[in-house]
Structures are given as C-alpha cells and as structure tokens.
Length: 114
Length: 112
View (cartoon, chains in turn red, orange):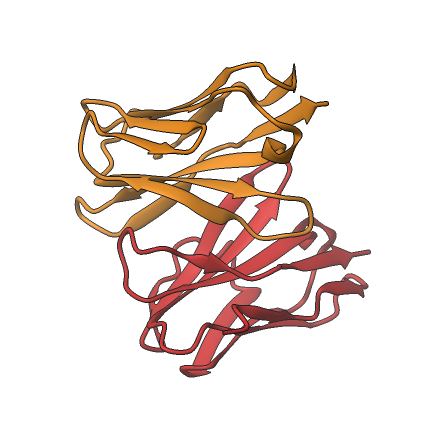
C-alpha cells in the first residue's frame, strides 16, 4: 500500500485566500484524523472521522476551518479565509480501528499564509 | 485541560550514551503511545502500552507505563545517530469521551 497520501506537500498563500488540503487514507481504514503541528503548540488533533462521519471536531480552532469526508478514500480540510496564524504543518492519519489502534500518518502539508 | 508534558524538551548527547525521556500528566490514560518523527515526515508509532506498570522493549528502547497510568518513560541504551528525531508521547482517554492528546515533544540529537 502507498500509505496515507496528502496533497499538496507545500502551500503558500496570501491572507484571506481559501486553502484546501487533501488526504487519501490507507484503503480499508475506518478512521481518519486531521492534525496540526506548530513549534508553539505541538501536534494537535483537529477532527476525526469514523466511516466518513465526523465524530469529534472539538479541536477545530474556529469556523474558518471545515473538514469533509465525502467517501472512504478522500477527505479535505478547508480554511476560508486563511490567516497568517494558520501557518503550520497539517497531517492526515488513518487507522483500522479507533482507540489505541496504530495511526499511520501522511507526510504532511506545510502551509504558509503570508 | 488535559496536558501531556514531556521532559526534557531538547537533548543533545554523544553516541553511546544512555538517556531517558519522560511523559507526565495529571490525567489517567487508558493507553499511551510513543512516536518518533523525523524532519519532513509524519510521526511513526514505536509502541503502545496499556497496563499500569507495563514495560516493553524494542531493541535498545525500553518503554514503561506508570502504575497509575498517568506517566510514561522512554529509555534509550547506547544511543546512535539514527535515534535522532522528535519523540512524542500520546495518551488516549476514554472516560466520558474519546480524547487523544499528544505530548509537547522531546527533540533528541545524537552526535557521532
């Protein structure tokens, strides 16, 4: 398997623009997670899905952030409008089951908002 | 607010030395995991511990889960340059709601 695939790997945009990050989980995995990593705050769980349904979005920082999972093989994280403080590395991860099941992380998308 | 504090934050040691990284919280975790992350990549799971007092070994790495399941340690024997990376602990809380929290991280550099 190719592992978790994320695109783009790097994104540079200007404040106020819409940003869409994409993720393809490992085939057969029922759980998908979106994380954000910064030097200041470390790795934070934003939202996770089970069988394409959002279960907990309490980590989403504000209404400017939204995530969807239209099918089992694709998810998006959208920021609209983007702000400089959104600059971070965004990771997608998937796991077969929930709980302590192994999460497999993608390579991340490095977002820079100018 | 649940928080997982790791110490030290940064560690630079010579090849062959031993080291211990700590992960502490006031919360009780049903399980705890350790990850290693290399630059430009996502974290990779090293181990999962689920029972208070549990000790697991992975080659030169020894992981321990505290008896009260509030803390954990990672001990590396005879560190090698290949051990360099960011080490993250992550705790899973099931009381009330599903919560998965990552620690603040320990950045390790092993010099040849």
